[in-house]
Every structure is written in C-alpha cells, then in structure tokens.
Length: 383
Image 1 (cartoon, rainbow, N blue to C red):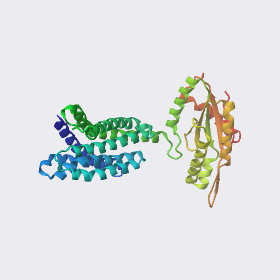
Image 2 (image 1 turned 120 degrees about the vertical axis):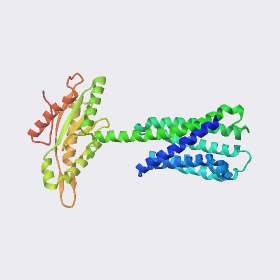
Image 3 (image 1 turned 45 degrees about the vertical axis):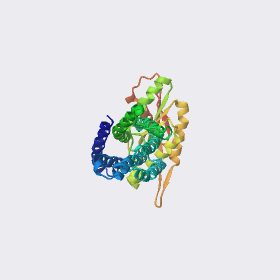
Image 4 (image 1 turned 45 degrees about the horizontal axis):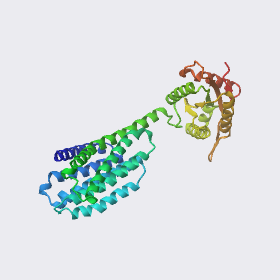
C-alpha cells in the first residue's frame, strides 16, 4: 500500500511539474509561480530517481533522491516569502538545513540500513514545514486568510508526523516503519501524497484570492486620487445605512466641489489640476476620522460621509476642511496653484425613509446654495 501511495505521489509530482512549467512561462515576472515550479521540478527529479533507481549508483538513487524533498521545500519557502513579501529569514534557515543534511545523506547512501538517512529527512522536513506553518498566519491580508490558514494547519499536522518519526528513531531507537508503527508509516506516506495535491491547489487559491481582491479594489477606487469611486461610494452608503439602522444614529453626507476648477485646468493644464486634486485629497484623508469616508464622483466633485454626526457636530468638521483647502497651496518654479471648495451637506436621521440612491440629492441642493452664496462656504440642506 505504501509503495502504491509513493508511486501515486511521483506521478502527481511529474504532472504538476509540467503544469507549473507552463504557468511560470505564462507569467514570467511572477516570482511565486516561478519558484513553485522550481519546487515541483526538484520533486520531479526525485520521482525520476525513484523510477530509475535500480540502474543508478546509491549516491543518486538514495542520497540525492532523499535530499530532493528538503530542497523542494526550501524552494517552496522562497515562493511563500515572495508572496508574503516578508520573512526572508525563513529562506536562510531552510537552505541551511539543506546544506547540513545533503553531505550526510550522500555519506549514508551506501549504508545497509536506510533508517538514518530517512529519519534525517523527516527531521529536516519537520523543521521546514513548521517554519511555513508559523509564517503563513502572520500576514494581515484578509483576502488570502482562508488558504493561508488551511496550509498552516496542514503544515502543523505534517510537522507533528515528521517529528514523531524522528522521535521513534532518535529517542526510542526503533524503526518507524516496523509493524508496531504501521499506522504512522501509512499516515506519513499519505501526508506526502496529500502535500503534492493540497500545496499547489491552496497556493493557486491564495494567489487567485489576492488577484480578485485587487481587481475588486481597483473596481471601487478612483484611479487618480485612490479614494472611492461612485461604485465604492454606493457600497459605503449601503453599509452606513445598515449601521445607522442598528445604532439609531444620524449621518452627515456632504458634497464638496472645487470652485473655478475648470479655469485652473484651462490656465495651467490638466496635469496641474490632477496634481491639485491628488494633493488636496491626500490632505483631507489625513484630516478625516478613521470611520469617515471620502469618494470622488466627478471631475472635481467629492462626497464625504461623516457617521454618527448631526449638523451641530459636523459643521465644525466641514468648516475646518474648507479652511484647509483654502490654505493649501502648490508651488513650483513658475506658478502658484490655489483652490477653494464649496460644501453642501445634509443630515440623514435614522427614521428617514430616503433610499440609498437619493441620499445625495439634498446635499446636492445645499451645494448649489453654497455656490449661489459666493462659493468657499458650507451650507446645509433646509427642507
């Protein structure tokens, strides 16, 4: 049974090597995919050494063959480090284990007993997968949490299995593959087979989760200012309405429009206007509270959501934003850029029957009033 499991593992390794070869060629600049291919390539070498073992010298069929497993996991660690963008120390530790174990494996290749070489690989592999189990959950990336924790759980279980085999040999002085430990031998062989299936699929899941999250974020963000766009604003308003219903609090919704923005673009060019929008938006984001929201819904038109505020508490906030915009100046060698902004705001009560799509209408009315009153001011909607 164990031989059949190991044969299945070798076939899987060769198949995944072919697949990830083409994947790495399709994405030549994707380092995690490329190093994951290197991992399977090392395993495929081990599989070929298994197939042709009877015709090869012992240092190849046994020594190097066993060492391809720690080498493959060292390469896997590199792939994870590139994906996580941290924990480079784990690569050094993993390859140091390979450097220490390789000469011993080659020296023990001709031993009558294969137990020392096998157990050394078990111990090294246990440390390597334990390192992966430790570093995977440490990322704060929410989109990849599920696949990372799945792999971490598997690696913890895998480490326990490998350390158990090493304990039986080094501490108890017994053969881990003897009949009395038959269950452990089957579990260990099964873990190898599962690793060849779970690892690539979970890694693909993890990469796809990040790509989907990035695409979703790009779909909801304004590409120039990196604040929410109209789609993102709609979702933010829906979320705030749900929270307002739960808490029974009021929300201030303000529209901000830069005064005479077209004149600035016509005079200094659109790049200058874009630079002003970026600079002012960054300043406003720093001034707003963590639970406040800012979105760009037009060329120079923005929406600001202030949860748990009414007209009395939001007026000083909006007035301070207006003053900071008025004080913001962008200078270079040839020009000085300056803008003012008009604000129109409305307060939505928890008992309001206004639907999400109509929440901006009162603020828009107040904004037009601010424009009529001379611009560079804050006005609230009056029913």
